[in-house]
Image (cartoon, rainbow, N blue to C red):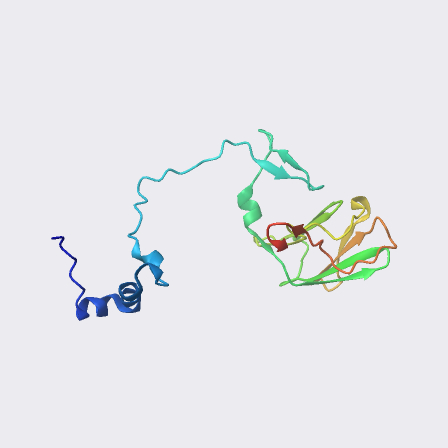
Length: 189
């Protein structure tokens, strides 16, 4: 005769709560079936490290390998507080982006801008080390721009920045600032 496991007592079921009761009543068809397994032992896991062959994105969006002598300070980029609350508008041959800063700009503040054919980035560095930025992020701009003609301007009140993007095709209306990319796996991004 095979020995059968003793049914859990009411106290044991009460200690296991709803999860235990569901597993006992429904077995493998329980909603909580995945919780039936014991915890995995993760002590033997190995950390995977890169080989140093990083691929960086360039202004034009094409990947390239980082050179050995290139200075790449990820910590500096992580310190930037990226602003997401901005306004923008299509102004004929130009697209203007308006950013109201959390604090004003003084003479010791550095404002720099960088433009690519389908990207932009403006960095505001204060003397106390606080840094704010505005960029198009991982999504490319809706249409191509002329990087050499694009500018940024600080308002007379020193609390707003206007970024002017000059369109390649000045007759093309921009209904969105960033291009929507269709992914076969996930849909719209």
